Image (cartoon, rainbow, N blue to C red; front, side):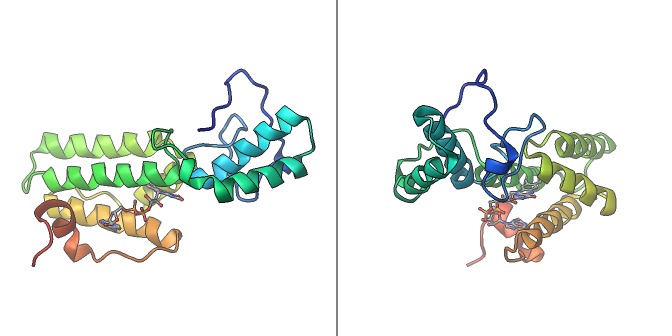
Length: 184
Ligand code: FAD
């Protein structure tokens, strides 16, 4: 497990970061915006550079070794990376859709709209959140029935899948995946 004290001065000089590393607004690598592998590599690299006082190149070499050989030692009870956070969040959102009424009341529709709006602003991966807010501006949320919301959410998830180069999910099957279980 990799843990850097909050009080430690940020070692995140931009030139030394692995390529593609997303930073938080405080300039440090964003744990919930990057993969565990990328975050661990950066943290190990930083730790070994600080410990030995050697240059970043040597630290990076040590980190690469750790990343290659140490992946099985990564504990399950670490803060989530972008993928673990995403999987858990989609599970929650699709399960909300699966349990949403077929004919929701005005209050239920309003609650769901409010929840999704707040969710899109609070989602801890800020780059994901900004894209999702843009998606919600473009594709107005549909909350007038379970199927309307489930399908809207499936399409929103597919937009992220497409952005990440993942296969698109067949939205006619969202209820089988998240509510009824697969038909035999
Ligand atoms: P996930 O995409 O997490 O999906 C979990 C399960 O949902 C799948 O196994 C599948 O059975 C089912 N599923 C897949 N697609 C659909 C669908 N369209 N409808 C219904 N069910 C489906 N990661 C980034 O790296 N960059 C981002 O910008 C980003 N934005 C995100 C925005 C939001 C709002 C959320 C919740 C997550 C975001 N993520 C982002 C995380 C990303 O979407 C994945 O969760 C993560 O990459 C793990 O992917 P996965 O392949 O395990 O499956």
